[in-house]
Each structure stands twice: as C-alpha cells, then as structure tokens.
Length: 188
Image 1 (cartoon, rainbow, N blue to C red):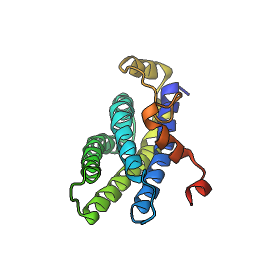
Image 2: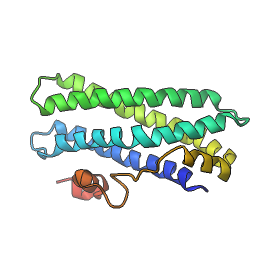
Image 3: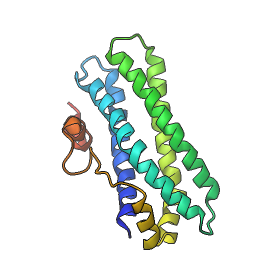
Image 4: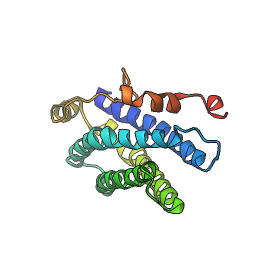
C-alpha cells in the first residue's frame, strides 16, 4: 500500500476526530460555564481545515481520482460528485469561518444562523468522507498501481499535517490537545 494512500486514509480518520471535537465545542457554546477557549478552538479547527485538507488533502484526492477515472471503474458518478464536493467544502469552510470570526470580533450573528451553518458544514464533511470511504477509496486501493501513485506524488509537493503530524505546529497545540484528549478529561 503506497504511503499517499495511507495518508489519505489517516487524514480521514483524523478529520473524523476533528469533526467530533468541533461538535463537542459547538455543544459547549450553549453552556454558560463554557471554557473561554471554546471559540478560539473552533476557529483553529476551521483554520486548520482551510490550511491542510482544503489545500493538500483534497488536491491529492483529485489527482488520485483523475487517475482512477482513466481506469475501467464503476464509480465515475461518485468521483464527479466528490470532486464537486471539494469545491463546496472549501466554500463552506470559508463561510463558516467568516461567521465564527464575526462572533469573535463582537459582530452580531444570529445564534441560529451560526449553529445551522456549523451543523450543515459538519454534515457536508461527514457525508463527503463517507462517500469517499465507501465508494472511492476501495477503488483507489485496488486499481491504482505503485507507478500511478508515484506519478501522483510527483505532481504535489509533500506537506506535513500541521495538526496531527510531528511536530504539531505551535498554532494548533491547544486544538491538538483538545482533539486527542480522552473523553473523560473533557467532561468537567
């Protein structure tokens, strides 16, 4: 199994952890005794998504899916949908981040609008990963050769994951601690 394919799978696992953490943070927004870091952790998560998945993970997937489309496969409709979702996810990341940055800067944003945008965003991300995990990744693993992956790798500059990679970027240390904390530690 090629390291780029393993990275795609690892990225999905890590994104699921991050989305679960964001969901917990959103629930904390409603609590009066919430941590003062709740909003900044949500902003860090959205920043991370715009830095790593939207700029490296999705372009890697797009290249792999383009290579897969050259093969005889049964999931071309799923691939086209997933590639369109990459654009929608980037736009949704930007929109959701703008709303949370507005709140952080004391701009009035309706709570229902903020939470609806965040919940829709989480759902979009999860449905997208489910589509890829179910329909596309098995085809990538089965049909792409080592040579295919080498060609894909030459088209990208390798980027270290700034949240889940080693070392974690200083900017994301608090977010990393929150995402990787055992659930018991989170319930205070």
